[in-house]
Image 1 (spheres, one colour):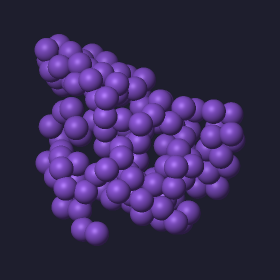
Image 2 (cartoon, helix red, strand yellow; image 1 turned 60 degrees about the horizontal axis):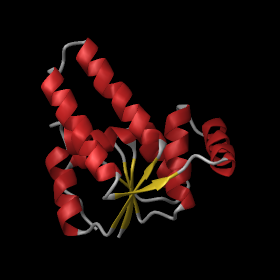
Image 3 (cartoon, rainbow, N blue to C red; image 1 turned 135 degrees about the vertical axis):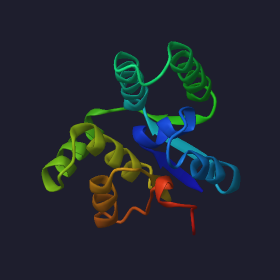
Length: 146
């Protein structure tokens, strides 16, 4: 199964959040190929920085999360670069649906690779994925069912 992770879901792999356990179950049971946008690395780092500044996580936890992401970044994930064509597709999606720019990039990336499953936590992104024919899954909503 070919899955695409947006950044909010990617974070569940490295920080304990609602849906973290379900994401790990998905990885161990059905995942064959895991795709992410190259944008996800910077977005994840920005989220870690925000959590540090708000004192929601310790520096050790932040460093560990970044190390684990870097390991997967260079081994597990198949990265989709933000090309001009992809940016154009994302712009069209952002105009058509109530999406933030980064979310539109993730959705356009999932569409570009014809993902079997778009693993995402944002309700607006889930709705837009369904409307363009991509199956979404929110791990925080419970275990994956085919």
